[in-house]
Length: 156
Ligand SMILES: CC(C)(COP(=O)(O)OP(=O)(O)OC[C@H]1O[C@@H](n2cnc3c(N)ncnc32)[C@H](O)[C@@H]1OP(=O)(O)O)[C@@H](O)C(=O)NCCC(=O)NCCS
Image (tube, rainbow, N blue to C red; front, side, top):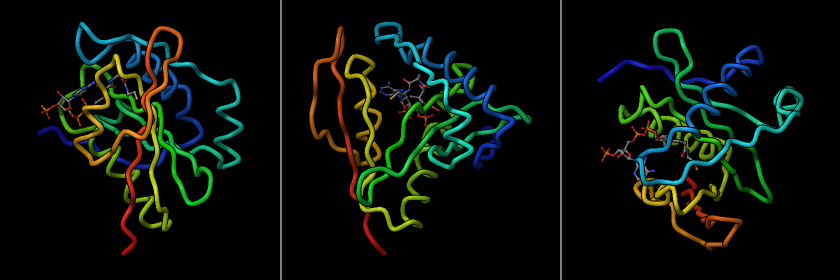
């Protein structure tokens, strides 16, 4: 088991996060899965500074090797997106730890529902199902299908 740490990102780490996200999205989980581009909005710095978007990073050997973004969404929901782990560091539980950390934050904030969307052709819905996310709807989008998933958070 490799040792990595999980924490919130800092402003000066945005470039690295953008870089690893772009790279991770270029290299799919398996050869026969869809490769998608990671669309990067220009205003990430501004939305990050304004605390509209939050980012959790995974650090290994002082380098960011994984990241996930989230925002508070609609009434009492949290939406996470752009989950990315560098190909060289996959299958070591980093993606799992990033998702779990999002869930810890949601619980602390008293969020009722976590939402996400992903491409069916990436076979990624199966990955999220392992964490208890359920499919709400599937919509065709250009050459692929977007799968909308969510998980209810139990209030403690
Ligand atoms: C999806 C991703 C974040 C997983 O990161 P990771 O750190 O390798 O994940 P973990 O180590 O926590 O989990 C690995 C397990 O998930 C499985 N898994 C990974 N990607 C999967 C996928 N697309 N579909 C089904 N299972 C998947 C692995 O086979 C492994 O299974 P095992 O535990 O039974 O051996 C990583 O593959 C990635 O960055 N992919 C490219 C970007 C992407 O598709 N992001 C999601 C967009 S919504």
